[in-house]
Amino acid sequence: MRNIPTDLMRSFVKAIDGGSFTRAAEMVGRTQSAVSLQIKRLEEIVGVRLFQRDAHNLQLTAQGRTFAQYARRMLALNDEVLALMQSPAVSGRVRLGAPSEYTDSLLPHLLGRFAQAHPHVMLEVTSDLSKNLLSRQQNGEFDLVIALHDDTPAGGGKPIHTEPLIWFTSADHFGHMQSPLPLVLAPPPCVYRRRMLQQLNRETKPCRIAYLSSSHSAVLAAVRAGLGVTAMAQSTVPDDVRPLGVADGLAPLGHLDVRLHRRPTAESEEAIDYLETYIAERLGQAGGLAPVAGQYAAG
Image 1: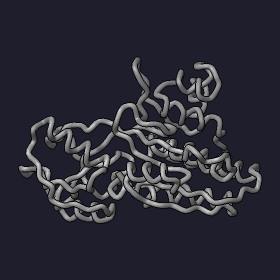
Image 2: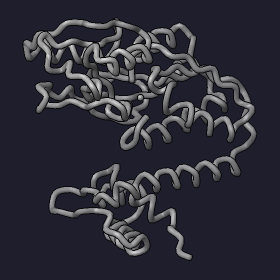
Image 3: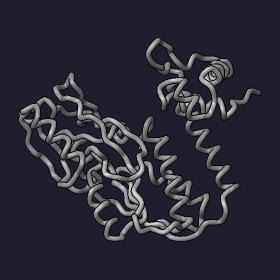
Image 4: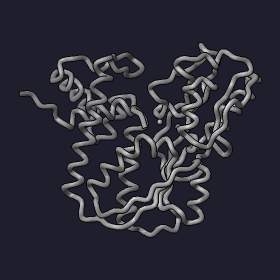
């Protein structure tokens, strides 16, 4: 029976995230040649080519993309059990604010694992628009806030990951072919709304607001029903919709930053410290690659 060493998988994942063996070497504390040999050994163990190499960048093969999903899950489980075995008993309360797409999709999985590792920590999770969450944090309502940023500089916080904003519509309708373009939006100060309207204004592309709701689930339901198009971070786009791009007459919307904010006056409490580190590591791993699901009662 063959086993896959976790150090090989970790270098493989870091090569994906860093875009090169050189960058992966910096992240895992090895030389570039050592990482290259690790990847070669990994390919020998699994019996397939994981990367298509060229002079400029690394591209995953189809088998490499499949293996990457499993490698991330295996590493996450490895790290989780080590944290569970090695962590001291932590107790306390942490008030977390996050966009709805995160609380609806990725966070239940991540926070469920955190709760298993630290059963004496009570989590209070609240959803709202990112800018509203940050404002409420200044008033002392939250210890930690996960927020989306579309401005430069991003406005403080700890960077977690950056990803493109993607247009999408119903899989069964063609609202993107209408003029003016029907939009499904959240009210201000939604980050997604602002980016969409700015881009369409720059293009002088006619548009109209066909549906407005602060509910993330309601916005997704409206898009699925064919009321219009919308956009969200790539890792949060649901599987049952149709992504849109230049070929559909919609220009790229650029990227968004996801940052983790800690209440400025928060003392160094173990429960907050542990959750802050956990979210930064796990959400960062998930965000650049795999999915996290919308930002409407979120943006």
